[in-house]
Each structure stands twice: as C-alpha cells, then as structure tokens.
Image 1 (cartoon, rainbow over the protein chains, first blue to last red):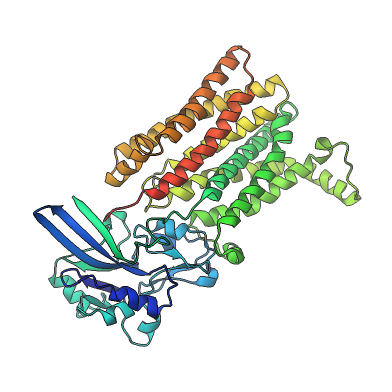
Image 2: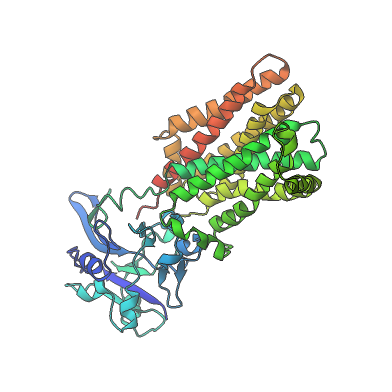
Amino acid sequence: MRYAMVIDTLKCVGCSDCVVACQTENDVPIGYCRDWITETVNGAYPNIELELKSERCNHCDNAPCVRCCPTGASHQLDNGIVLVTGNECIGCGACIESCPYDARFQHPDGYVDKCTFCHHRLEKGQLPACVSVCPTKCMYFGDLDNPNSEVSQLLKNRKHKTLAPEAGTKPQVYYLI
Amino acid sequence: MQEELFTSGRNIPNIDPSLEIWHWPISVYLFLGGLAAGLLFFAGLITVLGKDKEYPASVKFASIVSPIALTLGLLALFYDLTHKLYFWRLYTTIRIESPMSWGAWVLLIITPISFLWVMSYYSELFPKWKLKFEFLNTFEKFLQKNRRNMALALIPLSIILGIYTGILLSAFNARPLWNNAILGPLFLVSGLSTGAATIILLAKTAKEKHLFGKIDLILIVIELGLIVHMLMGMYAGSEVQLEAMQLLVGGEFTLMFFGFVIILGLIVPAILELTELIGYKIPVAIPALLVLIGGLVFRFVMVEAGQITRYLY
C-alpha cells in the first residue's frame, strides 16, 4: 500500500474548491491552509504558458520532517501518509524548517499541522475531501503499489513531474503535464 | 522568466511569505550553547592536563558563566516552543536521526554537570559564604574528589554540544544556506573561540591571558578558514546554494556578515591579539569582547538568512 495523489495541471482551473473543502473538512483555523493553489507563468510574451495546480504536503518517501522531529510526533504510516500527533508535538518548528514545500504550519493551539491526505476519510473508504469536490475531476488518489489503480495507470501513460525532486525527498504528489 | 502567484491559501500572512518561525531566541541559544560548550571544554581540558592550579580562571571563575549561559539558553529555547507544556516529550524517546533529540539529551546531562562543577569550587569561589548544612560540605568534598571524572565527561559532551548547534541547522536540506556539512565544525570552533574570549576577560594573571590569547588566535584562524571553505563550497554548489550564498556575499546580510562577523569579529581581534602577544600594550578585553559580539552576530546572520533560502519550483 502506497497512497499517492495525481493532479492533472491541464485540467485544473484554479477554482480553489479543494482549498475550501479542506478547510471545512479539517476545521483548519481561519488564516491557515493545508493546501493551496499556485498559478505559474513561464516564458516571455508572446510565448507564455500558464500552469495552475493545487499543492499540499507531498507525503514524501524520504520525509525530512519525520527525520528531524525530536519527539517522533511526525511519523509515517505504512501506507506512506505522514502525520503529526498533536499531543507529542512540542512546537519546536524543526519540521517546518526542514520542509522544502513549506507545507507545514504552527496551529494556533501550538502544535504543527498539515495535510493528512484526509486519513480519517480514507479509513471510512472515502476519498480525501479535496479530491472528492474537484469540479473538473483533475485530482486522482489511490495506491501506487497496485499497478492497475487509476493513479498507477495515469503515471504509466502520461508525462508527469514532482515538485523539487532535487531536494531528495521523493515526493508522492504527482503532477500531469 | 518564471512568475508564480499564490492565488489562494498561501498569500496570507500566517503562512507565506512569513515562514520564518525561528526567531531571536534560537540565535541567542545557539550563541550561549556554543559559549558554554567552549567554557566547559577548556575547564575539562585544563583539569585533565593537571594545570588547574596554574590557570584558575578557566576552571574556576569562567565556569560560573557556563551554568548561567546554559540556563538562559534553555529558557530561550523553551520560550520559542509553541506547544510548551509538551516539552517533556523530548525525553520520552531517543531519535538518532534528529539532531535536536541529540541536543536535548546532551543538554539534560551537561547542564547538571556544569552546576556540579561550580559547586565543587564553591568554597574557593565564595570563601565568605559558608555552607549552612554539613551534608553540603560533604557533597562538595565528594565533588572535588570526582572533579577529574567530571572533566573527562565534559570534554566529549562539550564537543557534542558545540558541534550539535551547527548540525542542528545543517540537517535541514530544505534551507540551502544551512545545508552544508561544514556548519557543525564551524559552530564548534566559533563556540570554543567565544569560550576562550570569556576566559581572557575573566583571567587575572598575564600568563593565563596569554595562553588563551594564543588559543583564541589559532581558533580564529581556523574559523576564518572554515568560513572560506563554506563560501567556496556554495560557489561550487547548485543554483539554490548560489542564491543562498548571495545573501551573504553582495546581498542583504553582507554588511552584517563581512562587517560585524568577519572583520570586527574575527580579523580585528586576531590582529589585536597578535600585536598584544608580540609585546605591545593592548587591553585584551577589546579583542575578547569583539569575538563575543562577532559570535552572537554570526548566529543571528546564519539563523535569519538561512530561513530566507529555499528551493524554488
């Protein structure tokens, strides 16, 4: 079992529905977010290219946040999901400094918070909130260890990239390009 | 050309671009931790070498500073935690991969030893204030007998403490300025140098001032060499490291780094200490204070600048 997310940047319109769905589902305090939309313009006029995408914690295979956590509050499940146990976290900020994606933040209650791939929904057999609401259906979620899963098939057939692979973190959110 | 906008989520003040979550307490702690590591290392070394009668400042007077520095440093660290009541979680686990876990455990051992060390010199340091309880006198005698054992423990512990303040930063591959292996030795040498400077300030005999002046001079030269190596390594590095280095060379931290750390904090004190050793009369407090201020500014520059550097994607 290796959960991963695949996001089609060609289908994403940047509506931020995933952001709002996450904030509602996970009770994210006002002013914070676990996922966000970026709008990237590449090239010089008139040859410019626009890329829209939804970003979040990459649930890295080689997660630096898990490595540097002094208490073990940041940990990785067997299915690859990186989680933070709030009452083990001391709020030292080491994991925030170690994340190349700036995916973590200090919750107003003190502990560090981030995307969980909606772990609590997966247990009930549901998809993550962001994936389930996407109006263009540009987000896919599934098991990479299963070669027949939708995500495995997409990565097999489509050109894709990950964010900052040079950081050596082996990110597990893939972007179709 | 690439232009990126955060259309939702991260264009908010609590997340980006203000992801600077380590503030002044961390810089102050890194300085105080390095200083205490330097002081305890020299106290241990001089005792093990059996020269404690010849160099009383390093083992006796300066050792009062180390528990104070460690206590203030720990308070600063605690102040910077956001989930303070859970700090004890540090001591329910040992995480080999996490430098902060190493640091927490070393501090748990070395801080009490630094207090016991001062306690073992109590009757010499405060001859006028007699201990009221007999068992405290017995305890002091016991500590005096074990001073050499404490010294033997202090040498490796203080080296780990000094080096960890650097490795703490260098373990973060997401911050390219910090992510170089030389930061550990660099912070250790800088810490030893500030320790030597404190001993110079508190020394009463010319002999001891000269010895630690020489030690400090050597340490400053090594530190300069390590800084050159750090910059060279980044020059030869990837794009993110080049960008990180530009903050120090030609960027917003250039004045602080070259002006206060390299020139005022290292080169000027080195020249002053050298002229003093040759025989000219220079109050040694000036280079010693410059080294201490330089060490503090160095921690501030590294912590602040490091948090600006990141991977762009």
